[in-house]
Length: 481
Image (cartoon, rainbow, N blue to C red; front, side, top):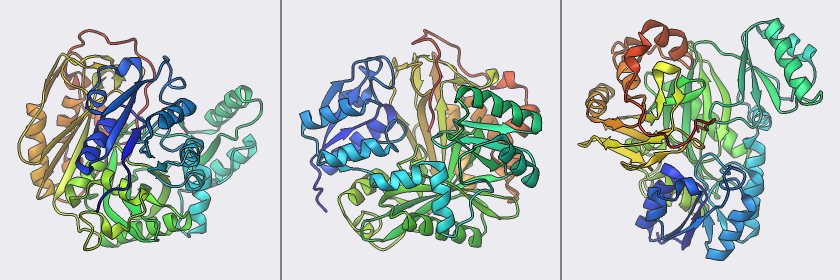
């Protein structure tokens, strides 16, 4: 099916911007890249048909500058905006500005972003769809008595979560009354007696993070491409993901898929997206949130389904039926084989996973059957301190999970990066852990497994990989998605 979109303004940077450029080239669509000064020499800038500098040194001045991006949209004549992940990808005001400019927003309508982009309103949508969310309050916090009553009813630990949090940010785990009062006093003082940016949820112990990669078109057709397990996290940010989610009973998979259909249908969701859940050891499922965008871990689903999810997202935005999308002509594909993604971050696991900006002085990429290396950084490229610490995503696929684990070990052995510390040796160590390998089916990994079981059991000095070289910039807070 020929695309009706002729030119894309890619409102993002790095690996995901390059990913969109590649798919657009295959579809015969021209591309416009935007870049900050730090990204001037990035690969996606060179590969796009046009590129425009975003002047400024901060997020607000550059990749979060809605009006500047709309000006570039008008100037270039682009007729669609794929926002990728992070930055403005889930911001209703930007989506509406794109729509008002007469361009196609490559994502759900801005009203769906309002309903699902905020975690409190998303909980309300789930309740209306009769899908149980994680135990919590679907209203903003107003006073400490409400917090204490909830904690005493459901028990500690609990989580205080920002309604606009993403990528593991904006989460505070509270373990007792004293910590809860201290949290309230600190934030109450800072926000003038108003904690409307926070809500409360029960912390679910030993739960897995399982999600459904979904797609719903404007005609009401829905598909779940595959499940994914994203339980390997540190500080609530994902490090290793796999598809399909291993060792799930068929009835749990069906329940997750049915819940995703109910929530997205209730919100009139039209796009690719991901519905995220916690799954207890006893199989109990609880809704967490909807990611109203493409996700970092989407390649593992692509590898087990053969569907280009960026192309699928574009096709849905153009008004196509789900069944018109290549790979879905015969209905929802049955996942084949297994895939695992490793986020290769410029971080020091032996130093608490601290990000370390710098220059990638050497990059030896593994090759061979079933190995994919998605990166926006080439040898000699910089990992700026202002942005995410991810260098690349190493995606490994094979006919079975056991074969995938074997292939992943060889790929990580072959991968070599110099100039910045990386998480490579951490990944290698995880692949030797019985709880993760689970040859007997006893999958022992959960969302806090790294902090609670893995790190206390190893000598963290053995996880150091790569010595710092030239610094690209001073370390600053980064954003993962």
